[in-house]
Length: 379
Image (cartoon, rainbow, N blue to C red; front, side, top):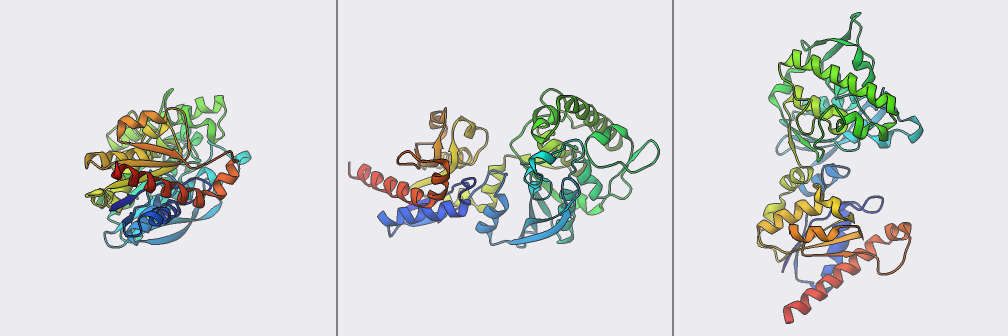
């Protein structure tokens, strides 16, 4: 038998690699001679770099950059030397996890550090940069990242703008004369599942600003400031992408990536699947097992099991999901290539217990799946 194991991480519990390892151990108890192919996955959020490097034998690199509030942080990023591709999780440099809840400030937080990571990738000789842009602490429309790459933003007095989205209301001039010329030779792909525009009631500030510390009045101010930035970008670049799907992703970093870098958007799970060679692995398989911490109707919004199931269904391979919990509406996924779904817990337990015992629970459920499969084959 050939079984492909392609799970996402279980948040606060196991990495995608750890989940795949535990499932493989459980299957091997029943199928010791089976061909077990582990393809740890991610959906463009946390764990993307780790999953890709585990599958592609890449290098983990670290670069000192400016964090969202200007404090220096060490950010990890992935490097695939065989095809000169860099994988950058913006959360490593500009993420919400870098800022304590009481210090979150959407008005002044900046993506400058993400731009520094892009510059490090260019210095390494990158021909392609994949930006995974989930989990941002910022709402500056990517202005900080572009400043790190040589774009100069001036106010009416000719002074360089202060960091953050609110300062964009004072923007008077954009100077592109010192932008890094290497950017024009590099392919940029954005791994994201957010389709929001930059501005308006469904824009970056309105939808995501509050979780980054913005009050209702600040949300309104930020939305106007980002709109003003978009106006001047349209003049400087002779194109306006503010209303394109994804421009509001990551506090508007999607906007800057589209406008300045010519970036193309892809569903995060599709980017990771391409890099790890999931389609080739699934070809000729008897079964695919995927999973995530919580499996529910939200999985339809580009989460890993949904993406894995699409690839498997195209090849006629059945898919089973192992999840920490099965949430409301998970049955909707049965119409999208998922054949069965199982929760890990065998009885009442706390979240802390479930997280700490996840390796054992995954192993046991995988063994159960193999035994049920054997029963079906005998029928």
